[in-house]
Length: 131
Image (cartoon, one colour):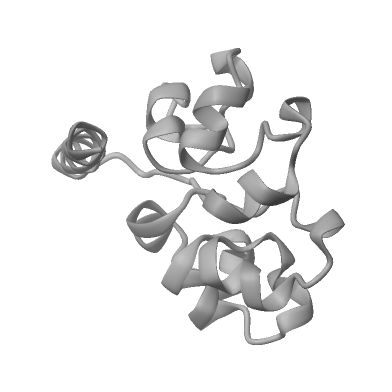
């Protein structure tokens, strides 16, 4: 876990150092905070970003972590939620492609399809920053 966190922080630091613009609107956590300056586009972002940006609970269905747990009471609709929520709700690995973190790592073996995954997965998979 420490390794993944370190890897993520190094990647973020490298992208900042190189002055790259990262249009990762769907990415999670600090990546989304850097990349999605327009709050209106942060609806799908994870964690605190979603909490700030998505004031309408009905639109928080795709948000990550505690936000998804509060907002998406119907497990059938939690398929895209992140972390433990996805693990509980998405029993079909084929449908976990967009889930965050370890779920995405297990489920999305094709790196080309990991573009929307969160955190370290997105950093590994989306080598073309323009995408």
